[in-house]
Length: 122
Image (cartoon, rainbow, N blue to C red):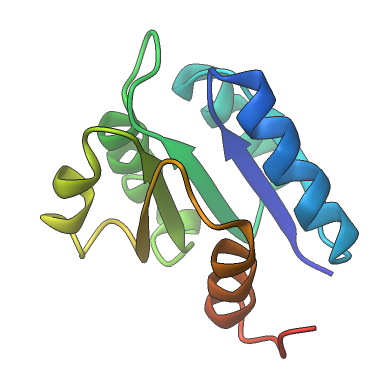
């Protein structure tokens, strides 16, 4: 099954989302900021990335642009989750495959992940 990278400096959110995705059978790797996320991206080669917007060192848009600059990840689906800046994600549909406002509905996130990865919803 697919590997999903979750990048969020709010560890509780990353954990809740991670546990829910692991329950669906996905492998989950996590990072607390975009720079660490890029290291994990190169190491674990995830098939989908979920990122927060407001994070230290590198915001979600900068992180997503850095992913897109890497030829191996040009087509990797990136999902943005944000409390206040979700509109910036919606303004960049060429970068983000989906955008969720926080607080998010975990079932809708799981359904979107399955859809983006071309899998049947469980």
